[in-house]
Image 1 (cartoon, rainbow, N blue to C red):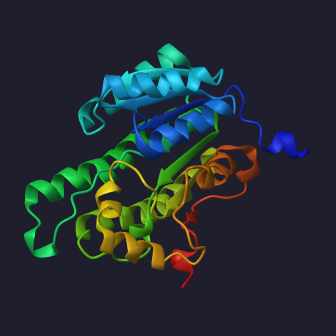
Image 2: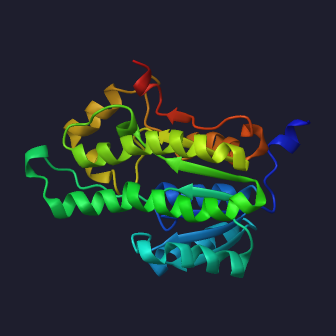
Image 3: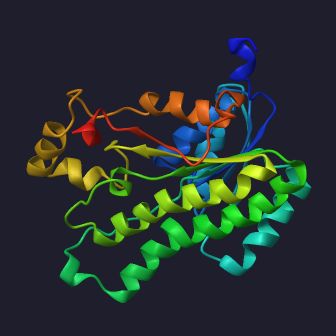
Length: 255
């Protein structure tokens, strides 16, 4: 099989959650650039419209859906409607995430539930709904987005790290159960990238220095550093890989 073929995803339909901003927007743009039809899900119409504009500016194809993925009782119906309108989902990128940085002893049940609902419960049940469709076709790529918190503890982020640690195990167990259905489930664990969610950390000079000192490659990542891992996991090149996680963190977790 030639190299262009194993990385060919032109014409595939990719569903990306949290696509209105940050890394989610970047994932959508990268997949659009590679020839996918991107179905961009988020909670803010204006943000999604900008993502769509950016994809189309590069001659890509995109559709937007304003939807809160924590509406768990509507997830299956939403997936049904997406496939009826746009066609079968080939690639699912579970990107949407949230964080409230606070000391462990200050965490409230409301904050705990909010973070867990977005970061793991929605991932679980959206994956379930999409995988049910993929199962009938005996093919599909599911890409979960974890973080440094999937691998190490981060003080002040106990709930976030708990949710992202769960992504590690969900990726493995879903991969085992879905392998016989022709579906690969893998994950990307980004390090610190400058986004709206992480901006407060970079605005704090002490925290910024702490981050930079932890990265062996000596710099904070840019979105271009994530594109290779994303396209690899979305393409036939990764057909014999499932239940795995790729850390893209400048070497942080190598130590």
